[in-house]
Image (cartoon, rainbow, N blue to C red; front, side, top):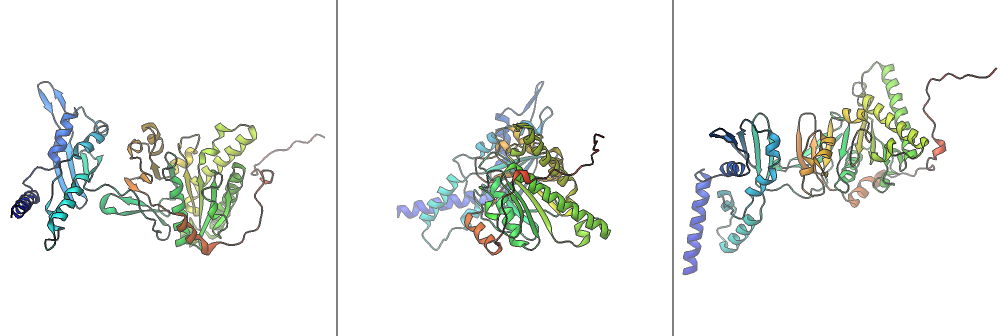
Length: 432
């Protein structure tokens, strides 16, 4: 009898609390956020007055809440960005409220006590995540559930490849190589750059097997991209810098051939000419082609030549069906040619060690604040910037994807002496 009374009272209290929240009668995170901002020292003293962060608007979404605040004079968005972790930790405490939607999930025809225990345990362990943005007002997005830590690989469609899942409704984001031809990847080692390259290749091979041409450069000794050496889509693959030059020269000559064909047909691009083939030049760890780290003059000449060709492909390749995917841990000007970085409108940055490194990749801070989760990254295009979880691709998926396309290829590894310098106009003087 006592148990029934206690259970009924507990359920009544929870229901009343949930009903009041559902009707908007109880406090919400907007007031708590303002209090955290105040305690974090972000208010501004102006003589006897205190200028505070004022709530202007709030919107409820399926993923959580979005709040907009007017920040006081004397404060900038960067001041609030520096306190993002303080805001997030302040919202995640052990006092968790049961909502009306939580109660709707209960099975009232079954045993309620275990369900209530499970619900309460879930409320104590759930973690909210926040994002900050600025459009003239401070935007604070509070997500009810954290972003997934692991996302399964799903192929894209056509020249669209999966980039990752965003927080909003777990929406899968795609990168369209027809819209944005070149991509730069950055981030600390072992956080997901090579995994993204593998998922991109598998998506292209799965969706466009007859029209994909791959020029692969794996300067990690071949440990990442060697699986694709014998598939029909791979035109050339390189594991050493001198092999990289040979592969880039092949890609460059192919690009010039397409350019001549378009000129002869009177067309401006492969799209206008109806050419379906696309060529992907993919370089994993382009830092190994840094000329400043060369030991000999010949090595420096070779690496400079590689960077020159990459720059030309970046400038001219978009309309000719060439796409660049360049990955490195720290993409500064002496590692990735500036022409490549400037022509790459899409950047995918995984966690980095400092705000300086984040600015190098994204021209903005943020990647240094990403959690230490493999695959977590910031995807940035010309008009948008999103945090997402990139898909995880396994060795079995790679094997199953490329198995139908494996062919027997004859030929030996390219020797350094076999690489021919690109022809330039010269004047030769002979002794008479």
